[in-house]
Length: 159
Image (cartoon, rainbow, N blue to C red):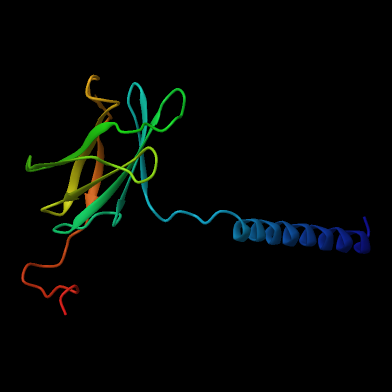
């Protein structure tokens, strides 16, 4: 291979790499926006459950809003008007829980928790299709809770 052939191949490769990078950038720019929300995926015998919180991760002494999406594991259909709760326990064995409120989206439930301390909390979800069914519990997961403002510090919410 002479120097001209080598240079031509080199330019061809560089052009292909550039085109691939431009194509990837354009497809990323034109595609669906990425979700910045962390989502926990859980399963029970009959349900697929996705849990997200705002803020993520939650902050101690502030209320965290949880959104829970529940689908039937086999049919993948959203579960309407089910019953459930989210709960958490810290290392000191302090527990908190909140029942789900249904809506407004199909298969979507809401709950709010207020963590009293920062650190690692064990979290879990229980759910059932209706009151005639037993509660099914997901496997627990660990949730890190960020420290909040120190006690006595001025809050940004106050004028």
